Length: 243
Image (cartoon, rainbow, N blue to C red; front, side, top):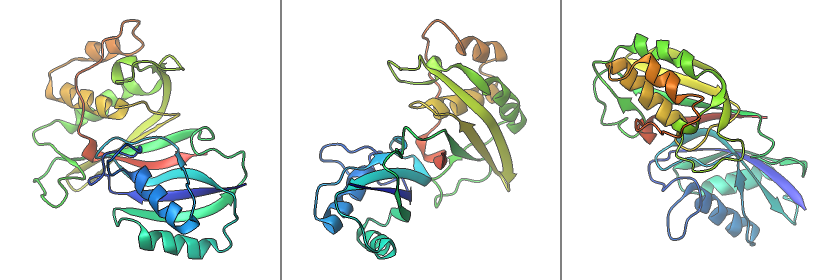
């Protein structure tokens, strides 16, 4: 058995999320469709994690197994990109040891969120959150509350979690480009809607709708009280998987 690691980008706009679902157009189903054609067998890919509908990826990682060795990986890569939907681009393919697992070997991830504080752009409407009249300094100030190892059960829609909703966010950094705030979230892993709920909470704080005590009380809480704030999927990108 031969194991292959692929790194790929995708525009999440046309897909119903990453994960394969019956009778729906997803990133996983499209990649598997192409692999099945080229390898003439049923292939299942295993990604570092799922992204929701509308979320994008710059460097998503997955692996798959094949009974037959791929002789020319460069030619195989070209064939994949020729057949696959143009909302996906396979950046690389390499043979790896069978001990490698795209999800379980990962040590961390970096996500990016884009907020445009300038004029609305119809061209970028599916790729950033447009938001005016917000104090950016307050968003940046409140990021400090989310850095560290803690219980994020009130910032995810997951009903159950093997790690009791404990995750560590190593760092939240940012940069300004023109009228855009680009936020980088680096952590050991993120749960469903976690970053979007954090960003949504930061925005509400910047608006003055909630205070510091609200944020602090919802972190490491023994009571499940999920925040209702959630930023749109379109501004979120999986930037990097760390191994």
